[in-house]
Length: 166
Image (cartoon, rainbow, N blue to C red; front, side, top):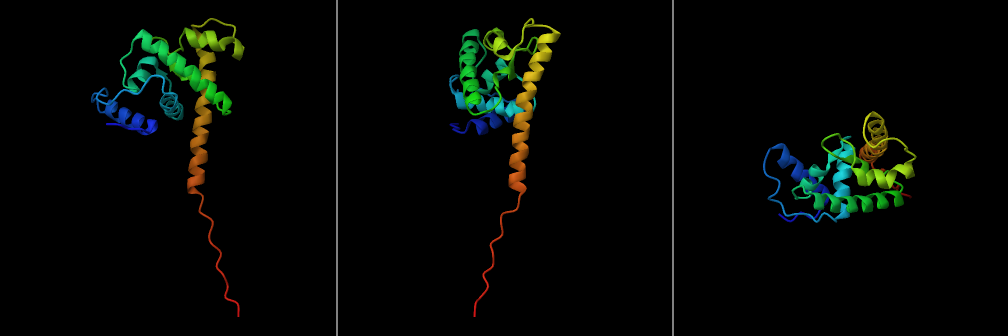
C-alpha cells in the first residue's frame, strides 16, 4: 500500500495499531523522511502526548534498533531546524524513552544550553523542564486546530445580489 500523504499514513498505522493488527505490512517510510516524521510529531502534539522512539520508528514501519534510533535523532534535528525557521515550537522534545518518558541524551546535549536548563538530565527537575517544553508544542498545535476549525466554521461570504437598473 503506497500512501504518499504522511498524515494519512500515520492515521492508518494508528488505526491498525489500535485494532492490534500488524503495522509492518505497510511499506517502510525512510527514517530520514522529515515530512513523515514531522507529521507523526504534529499528530502527537495535537493529541497532547509524547511518543517513544520505538513508537515513532514503528509508525514509520521500522522495528526499534539503536542504529535506527540514531538515524531518527538526525531527522529530529532537521524537523526542529525547519520548525524554528517557520516560527513553530520544536517537536523533538516529544520523542522520549519508554523507561522514564524523557528525551534521550542527544536531545539534552543539543538543547540544554540553548534553552537555559542547567540541571540533571533525569529526575523530577528534568521531567518538569521537559513537560514545559512539550506544553509549548501541545498548546501551539492545539491552537492551530482551533484556528482551522474556526476558519472551517466561518460562513463563506455571501455574494451580493445585483439590482436591476431601469
